Length: 125
Image (tube, rainbow, N blue to C red):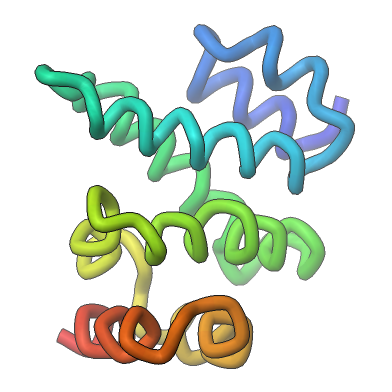
């Protein structure tokens, strides 16, 4: 089992089936981004689960991870989070400025200009 799957299983055991069935990190991170959005929509958001989703994404984008995993985290988790009004403000605390700068072109290419500018302002604080 790959390191990203092992780490996901440790952090998110309740999503074990989803993790095991994922063909790759792109698929898993896309599904987890959807889980994040759904969690924020609940009347009483499950903070522990939300924290663990963000923790997994942060682990994936850490500089010591493989470039493919890092890019998957940006494309499939952080970009969708930046698009969502429910999660965008969280990026102030969840996305470091150095990571934003490193992947600035990805965000620029995948977000409408106003959302990109909002994100840039958030992570520079």
